[in-house]
Image 1 (tube, helix red, strand yellow):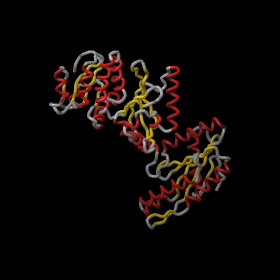
Image 2: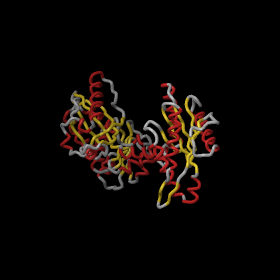
Image 3: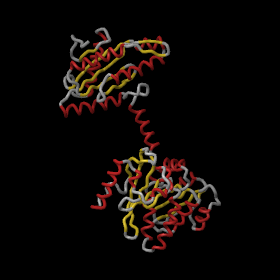
Image 4: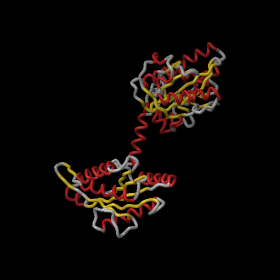
Length: 418
């Protein structure tokens, strides 16, 4: 691509928006238009680019092969193209934040000539109209001065309804207070707490629905007056994907209980908290008695249903501050935070055994299992995760050797709490 000085830019889409952007950037010495892409070789933007000796591409893949280091403006409204560019060049290379800096740097350079400023603002409106991200401008009082169509689509308002409203109309109460505080702090002492960087917060649609958004706020000066530009996107789908990944990584997919990884994290946290507060943590290591026989005689569907029911019963047997987890197979654990004493732990363990002993019904079949439980406590049986788990596991096997379906306290081979 061109070897001119300036920030390299690749424009995707040679329709009205892409052409307007090309016309503006081509005259801007701070920007080097490295190319424009459109499958229609007769598109008006392609013709404009050829007239300016700017490279044109009819294939996106070919353009991206030459686009290293470019800021890419996708003017097609096709999110699939943005995702492809992100995979090829990185998410930071696709329009969505940096465009504001480029847009308003152009306007800042032209503000000394009022007539030319408004002419270029009109061109920018054509570009902004095609941007998928929401763009909103406000004054120092938080009054909305302008929005692009994407804002209306994201929040469910007509554009005209938002003009003149306070920006708080797009936020829940908690976010309103935070935003007002940031704005006042900046205007008072110039500290850019949340300017010029992305942050996540909560938006509020016209319907009242709250949803996650990502926003970048930048300052601009027009005719000597401060204004702020916010560029935002709805990240609901991204958050759902992140939550799903968290579920897959940290939760057992059958019982929906924390898995082994999350269990160890929770136990580590509970021990750290207990050390600060000089309190007790109890660990129950549970192994089901007779589970294999259920699987072998009634089938895996019954076995799975039984495990799900065990998970529900364990969760119902403990406080909200405690943790029940599935370690794998028919092994479960429970973390009891700050129990009153070892007698109360024994009482909970024996209640769990009674609860798990109750029959489970599934598709006309009935089954039941027992539970052997090993108990260890912090700090009596260990001061770290590994020691507590080892002691509870050993106690569980002692409970099995003593006849199963009972609880056993670590380090007490002659006495079971059952």
